[in-house]
Length: 412
Image 1: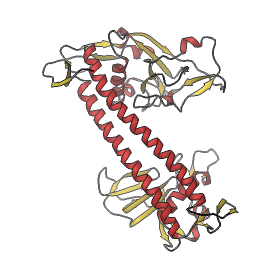
Image 2: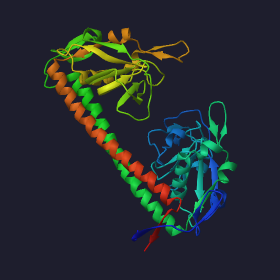
Image 3: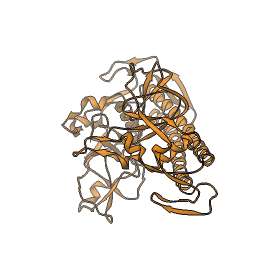
């Protein structure tokens, strides 16, 4: 890419999709796409079959989730559905909030196909870059465009080929498209590299938790117990013997911003003006809610805990170090202990159930050493997550400026 020069656009024209630069066009997708084709439905699985991408294979950031496909029997007309690098994949069916997710297949797999929940779009690359469509659709999705035009059904929403083909998009000159795509792709690459670092740290943390929470630090002798093999010096005790949890309460007021966070079943859910507990560490356990019950959080300082969660109110500091308990309960996967309604529509974990869970318990000094190692890993994770959030804010701002022509790019 040659040198890029940025300048603020001063001349706009009114169009059905808003003001755009005077030398840009507005076109319907059908005028620049030479193929729009849905994939095929298949409820069967075949380990020796072909990989099929599905609606959860499309990440909202425009990438293919390489872990979300399934293998299905190879259909007779398989060649019609083989993906090629540069194919645009549009999520035509999903929940109202997720419909319209778009990604580009970049050759992540040697040979794969796609399901009927995805529409493959192929465009005339002499007029428009696939990536221009990608970023335009990502911005439309973020602004709720697809949510507004979709056809809503009982369990999910859909967008027809006809509606898709009639979507209007802004179209700059091809050279400007290339420059804008280059800029946004550079940010995307940085986001992807950060994602890779985050995943490596997660794998490291998972391995360390397995090692430290079952073998400890420096132990040579082990014993078999009702909860597995652990160091000989460790105890097996009921959680309620060393600490007690209490249910939270509904806060009087919930704010979008503030200093005192409210923890609910899904973690922080807002802010309030007064605290329920204020101490160095607080272990919080989600007690209700399909998908969130049993999740564990570690809070610090002044917080409020809602009635959807429990918190560590009393504990014996001579026997437990709260960050260790946080990592141990996370490792034990409390969702395995929850109570469900007959229909499976309601799930809960009670104080009694939580207090009766048996745990492995090292001496408190070893608990502290183990927790400090894992806390360091979590600090590194937080740094990388904040880096990713910053890059995503930069990408969003650039898309709002470059995809609308408010800031122009000149290639020299």
